[in-house]
Structure formats: structure tokens, C-alpha cells
Length: 99
Image (tube, rainbow, N blue to C red; front, side):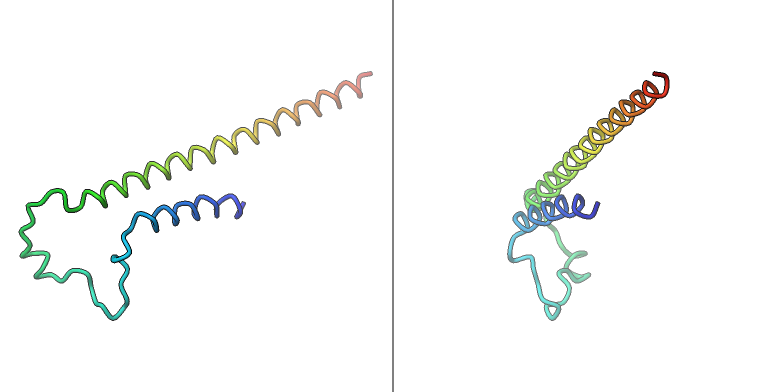
């Protein structure tokens, strides 16, 4: 079970690491990214400033959704195969008891 969950998590971390720019990482001594006066006094009318991050989150969300659907469909196929095997074994057992 753990092996199944680590692959999508590893893929998701790789996607995030490739999208987030290298300058975003900061050390603990750098302090907070934003201080209250900067955020309150900011008059930013450029709407394209955060579109890269919005697009990145959009892609990550859809990738996570399709990964989830893929994992669920694979588990469903496995369960259907097991159910068919159990049905076959039950039919064989019933036929040997009767005959």
C-alpha cells in the first residue's frame, strides 16, 4: 500500500519543484516574505503578476485529479479480477460437490 502512495507523491513533488522558481526558496534568517505595511500599502494594478503561480496551481490540481482517477481505476480493475476469480472458484467448488 505504501509503495502505491509514494509514486504519485514523488511525481507531485517533482512537478512542484520544477514549476516553483529557484528564487522562492529562502532561509530562516530572511524573515517573512511580506510584512503588513507592504501588503496593505501595495497598489498593484498589474494583473499578470501572479498568473504564473495560478497556472502552476491549476496544472498541479489537474495532475493530482487525473493521478487519483488513474489509481482508483487501477484498484477497481484489480478488485474486479479478484471477484471474477472468486466466482470461478466458487463455481468449481459447487460443481465438484454436486458431481
